[in-house]
Image (cartoon, rainbow, N blue to C red):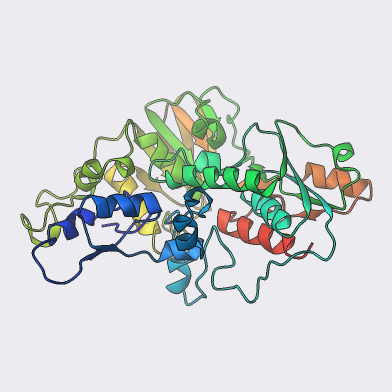
Length: 419
């Protein structure tokens, strides 16, 4: 069962240590998914433990304790329990770091120090790559203007936070908003930057992200076909039977989004315990409910498909991929690999298998969701280069393949450290 991943409710196991309070003569320490001063204080105030243990939050922000003591908790970079740069790195034999703080364990190699001379820096795109670049540049003393066509910062983080089990992304976006204001960055939201807007800046950073890749499936322009962006932003009406094309991270997130209805188990400890079959160890051995996991019925019948013939979700996080796969299986999501997408019509998605395109099959679906990868959005960078204007391209605008926030934030921070 999950114990420390982002889909686990905060302080999910503090009730276990509370059972020991007053019954042992040594201090009791509780752990797991305690990531803010407020959560820690609540655990102590409710008598769940004498002390709390934190590890990953100290990677996210080395000044956690000092900021908490100073009453500046809103400026603490939040641990979102993603495990992507800490535990996934550890178990892969790599140096540990942190998605939200690339300097963790790299402090002597990734140095952020005042610039020799302040410069005027324009950053286009307020997703994770652009935000990290803008904050680091401002921290070094540069005058930074951040542009984005949307009316809020966050980019694709605003879609991730809609997925049940990824509620920590709300706090990450809130933290970025706080830090942008504290750094004195000029925001130009709801404005699509043009080459003319960027004239006069000493440095221009393009972090315009990605666009959905066109899978070129016959019938994909039909009324029963939508893309993942409209689904996660609540702009698409989705039927009860859904075929999701593409089983990368976004495909898994969209499937998770579609099978849930109502309150997320991550926001309700009793619901989460029921879903995963966790119970009181005083009642059942090892704290495992004898009836096993009892998830709510799925809100939709979902089929998740991919072209690759490998196991679906194979490339997800080393310490979290199994959780995503297990969660979808508990919701009866059918996972099919090695397919050819032959076409889409009113009956659903037509597929075949293998190079010989054998076993033609119809995946009956009211709605087909396209999650078939991304391509870089480089139109502004190309326009600037056509004018002979040098610019730095980062994040998804640089490389769309296997894009994630870890790489985007790391790249934005490292670039700004050199400006």
